[in-house]
Structure formats: C-alpha cells, structure tokens
Length: 155
Length: 255
Image (cartoon, rainbow over all chains, first blue to last red; front, side, top):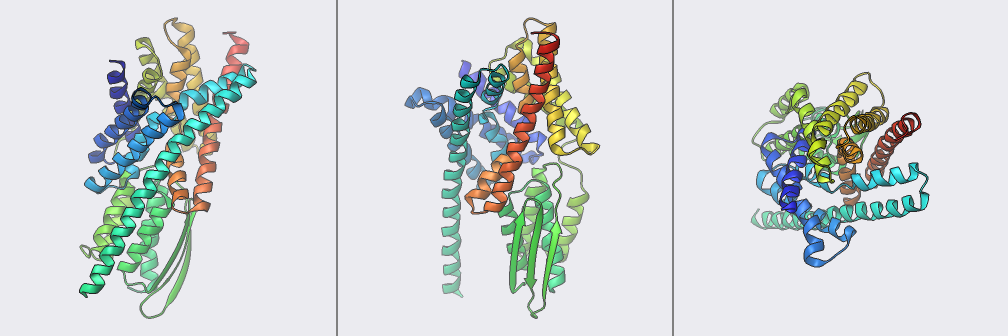
C-alpha cells in the first residue's frame, strides 16, 4: 500500500517537475511515468534482490534511462525530455539535507558518513544514466552505419 | 546556400537549443546534420555551455568562421524538442532552409509551453509531493505547497533583477528553510525537515546534472566538466541558503 502511494506521488512529482522545465505537453504524461518507473526500480530492487541503497539507486536510474530512450523512439522527442523529470525522484535531496544538518549541529563524523552515503547514491544514479545511455547510442551508431552502407551499395 | 547563410541558420538553431537546456553533444550533432543538409562541404562546430565556435566551407569553397556567445535562459525542453523537429524536417528535405530559418525565428520569440501561473502551481505541487515522498504527513502538504510557491517566486524575482543564478538559488534555499521553520513553529503537527526537503527539491539542478553526465558520456569533457561545476555550485548555494536561515533561527528562536 505504501509502495502504491509512493509510486503515485513520484508520478505527480515528476510531472510537476516536467512543467517547471517546460516538457512538451504531449510528452508530460510519459515523463511522469518515467518518474514512477524510476521509483519502482529504486523501491523494488531491495525487496527483490536484497541490494543496498546505492545499487537500488542504480536499478532505478537504469529503469529511468531505458524507459526514456524507448519513449524517445516512440514519441520522437529527445530522450532528455523524459530523463530530466524522470530522474528527479531519485535525486538524494533528503540525504543531502540531513548531511547538511549534521554538519550544522557540529556532528562532523556522522555528517561525513552521511555525506559519503549520499555521494555513493548519486554515483549509482549517474552510473545508470551513463551505462544505458552509452548502450543506446552504440545501437544508434551501428544502425546509422548499416543504413549508410546499404545506401552506398544501392546507389 | 552559401557559407554565410549556412552559418546563420545553424547558429540560430544551436543557440536556441543551448539557451533552452539541451546537452552540448546534441547541439553539435544537430548543427552538423543541418549544415550537411544545406550543402556545406566542411563543417566543424565546437559547443560549450556558454558559447559556440564554428567554421563552414560551402560548395564554392568559400569559408567562414563564427563565434557566438550564448547565455542560458530558463530551461524550456519544448523548444529543444521543436528545434530537433525542425532539423529532422530539414534533413529529410520536407522544408527548405529558408522555411527552417523562419520557423526558428518564430520559436525564438514564442511563449514557453506553460504559463507562469501553471509553473508556479506545479512548483507547489512538486514540493508537496516530495515532502510526502520523503516521509511527511498530511499536515505537511499545505505548508509544503505554500513553500514551493514562495521558493519559485523568490527565485524568479531574483532572476528578473537580474541577480546571479547562484544568488537566486541561495535566496530560494533561505526561503525554503524559512517556510519550514515558521510552519513547524506554528503547528506542532508539521514536520519541519520534511517540508524543507520538499521545498529545496524544486531547486535541485536536475538539468545541469543530467546534461553533465550525458555530455561526459559522449566524450564532451569540457562541456561536461563545466556543467558538473554548475550543478555543484547550485547545490552548494541551496545548502548555504538553508544553513544561514537555520542557524539564525536556532540562535534566535532556539528550536
């Protein structure tokens, strides 16, 4: 039940963020869906695979990037239009805030601990975007080359 | 088309993409495709987040080099998407270069996809959603919504002055913490921290971060590096804003 509510909220959050960045109207709903899928990966991975926080972030961000690249192919919008709103629920805003608070209270050691955890989490999100993005651009590159070769043979 | 026209058209397209928040590698890619479609024999372009350098040689061997300084405005992904569309139609010869130029001019002066009011409301909505997502309760929804509205208002007012983006974001962080502490002070049921987290989520440098990663991934190290710095400085500005208010509050009110 908690998961269902969280999924709905991440959908709303991603859409709201999409409006802030003027995501095209026809793509807005899918931007929201991307955010929902990201949260599904992040919240689902620890339950299914028993992984820790950074790996959960990685799973979420992989889902976000795969969904964005697919939506981009179908709707003919650039993938950024879906990634930007979709990735937002995975940004470790709360963890960064707690880190800040710990430093402010003078609890430096705990702050460093929290800060490192936050950095790893952010690294997980970045890694997901990187890996999936590279795979998709490699596929695109090969398709392009094959098409060119075929065109040369035909001409 | 001669070199001068090609450079004019591709620079317009590149600038429109870059000011509205496209990744630099995508700007380069689009400009190259458009240049080729207009019949350029050689086309080199180097894009950084703050400017475009290009040189083009046309079919007659006439060469031209141009530099354009670009200042980023508000992120408008609709416009990025529309330039993409124009470039695709140009390369598939569905429109002529002159029609493309006309479409780009219209796009440049056209309004954003959503009105100011819609964006303000959605910043409230986004803030409320994140507050609940990070463990806030029902009582936190209204203060988080109002906080989102105020943060959005402060940031856009500061940018209209115009203050530096980082100062504007610092003001946003300050406002976020202010709304959170005041709401927490007035109502015992409000979770101060969750409201502040929801409010600062609207200030997260999402576009800069995503673009930094995607630029580095495509080998655009200069652009990726500077976007990364932009994202980091923005995040630090938010943090400084929040910390300034919280320390003041704790010193004066004491909780």
